[in-house]
Image (tube, rainbow, N blue to C red; front, side, top):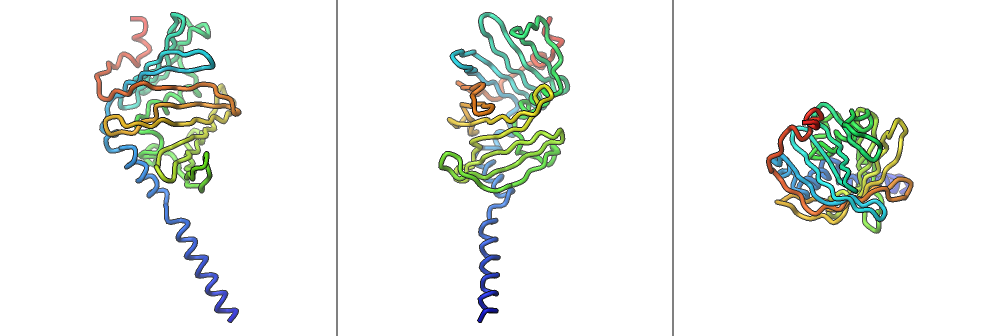
Length: 242
């Protein structure tokens, strides 16, 4: 009788394990890509983003440009001064007059890592193997009353990102990033909300970033425009003086 009970216990454990692991990483990613319209996003060649950067009581109008393959530019103007952050697919550069810049400068190694992330229109989860990333489904958690899958992304440079993906709607609600800023590792929390459809693609219209629980910036977007022509010179630092 004890032996029978033992065998039944083992069987129940195995069955329970199968049920708990029914959602594999590949299945979760497939549902995520279906939800956000990845097939359509993969056909998008350029993205122009308009909105504002909110820091405390300050609101700064911003405009962003992304173009395949791997080009990005973000700029904003405040009190008549314009800051620019850009990557042309090979070289990253910055212009920040609020830090005393009068001409563009090369991006630091840490800034370049962030620019490369921004230049990836598809996001870090899509085609991750081809990009050299490692993904792990590390478990589940509760995020503001919602069950989320925890998907850990490790990049070749050592930066680690944990994505909190809604287990019901399959959109990313939060990302915890362990990245280097000026050589010092920091943990940054990014919260994604106000998802809306744009030409068949689901986009977050609000992104809030926190460090040590304090909001350091919030991006509120008004529009995303796909496939407008964008001249490559916009991403080129040498064209700035022209």
